[in-house]
Length: 228
Image (tube, rainbow, N blue to C red):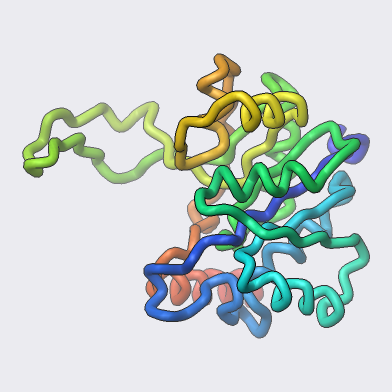
């Protein structure tokens, strides 16, 4: 089914890398290429993808655009400037695409995504119009107050750690971003606020988000193991 879809991808990479000790994580090296190039490469290999928009900070736009000539991608890659919040950046990406049936939103700092994860998302989204990569939580989770005292220990079965890719029918994500103004930490939360059902599908424990130098080091180990 996925080969018949018309899909646009928004890669969100406009963050400030504030916890990276001065290193811009999306341009950090991973297996001889930058993290951002690794992410784009994966989506370039996905046949349903017809449009691709990379959202960068204003300061990184030129640097990002220069990657196109070096990488030699066969599909066009557009770049646009993001906003203050993540959702502002996603909306900027949405405003750059048209004529697609589905939209995939992916973190530019998750370079270990695979075509298999992406295709699972496209298949799962067919059920409800929205599908989100996630993995079952393996740690015990505590809910605490501002005083640090535990208020509740929710049972672990049923708890999932959400990742990207997140896949949306175009009309659903477009409506969510134009109707809901609440600040959220992921795109699916906006859709949930409109009452849509969100399908979780199995991501990967390797599909980590690079936020700290330790994450970058771990990504390097995982990348080497995969390539080896």
